[in-house]
Image (cartoon, rainbow, N blue to C red; front, side):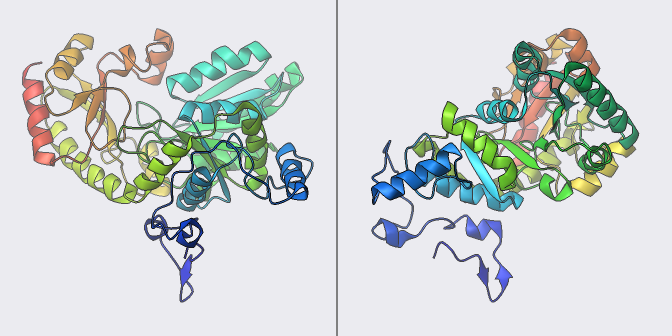
Amino acid sequence: MSDVTKINGRPLKPSTLMMGHGYDPVLSEGSLKQPLFLTSTFAFPSAADGKRHFEGITGKRPGGADGLVYSRFNAPNQEILEDRLSIWDGAEDALSFSSGMSAICVLLLTYASQGDVIVHSGPLYAATEGFVAKWLSKFGVSYIDFPAGATREEIDAVLAQGKAKAAEQGGKVCMVYLESPGNPTNALVDVQAVRAAVDAAGLECPIAIDNTFLGPLWQRPLEHGADIVVYSLTKYVGGHSDLVAGSVAGAKKWMDPVRMLRNTMGGICDPNTAWMLCRSLETVELRMQRAGENAEKVCAFLAQHPKVEGLGYLGMIKDARQQDIYDRHCLGAGSTFSLLLKGGEAECFRFLDNLKIAKLAVSLGGTETLASHPASMTHLSVPDERKAALGIGDNLIRISIGIEDADDLIADFEQALEQV
């Protein structure tokens, strides 16, 4: 049954719950998998039910709708998906979106008001950083940032600056937004230190974190002090490079305001994508484990190659501060990493153009191995001085290892490096 979460008092693991949690076949003619619900609206049992649902949707009564209303607000496939997403991070509630960026934008818009300051780590995904710096600034929202590996003392100092800046503008620090590992360098943020710093500063804002690179398998930020976890579900959760979606998850007190704005703006994940994501969640653990094992083997080869200057791989951290964060926060090294070639853009392009198995494409977390050049592709819009400060150089290639045979991938990288 869909509501079974324990057997003999023992909680079931996420990989087991992905096979049926949130869905009862009895309600759908015994269908083993949930049907695809292609409908825009739902019939109410009574007028009183309709009133009660809209009281929840409009916020006149806390808790949201008691039932299905309209697919801009909720629908069966999306609700099943959200129930299952909550499990991986141990979150009270989760919300699905049409893309990772729609999730991030609605989240930031929910909590930011004129005069407010967003404190964030760096690097961020370029579109996230662009939304904060270019678009929210139009509405009087500013930001201040700190490097991913910042110490507690450095975080304290930045939060103090953020509070002072907000006071000058007549606002507040409305959110601490993190991305860890950072895209594309794999730099880690000390979430525990951020939590302690936020509490010490007396801030009541949420700490949100983009956990796309390691989640939901290799890092559980809510256990280390984050309030909200953000995903591009397009990546590892979807895992087949065939859909675009996003999500946020956390305690209901943080999710309810986000749900209200999503109800107004739209942006909920469509039913077909939600159905496909439920399919993908059944194998996310297997896919991420296989990709992680492949990445370990591939990086062992690349680390010894004379044309490789360095690797931003979490299984081979050389910085003591980063290793300490990894040991406390991470359950695995993942399968996305940065490859630093000796040379620059020309050498990177030659390597990329000669790959035969790995695909030259942006995105990550799919079953196939992907490689791209962030400085000229995903992070092209980031100013050059900002890229330099964040370590996004012309010799950096981002690689997402898939589930192919590891020896075949090594052979592919070896022959491509020979052309450099």
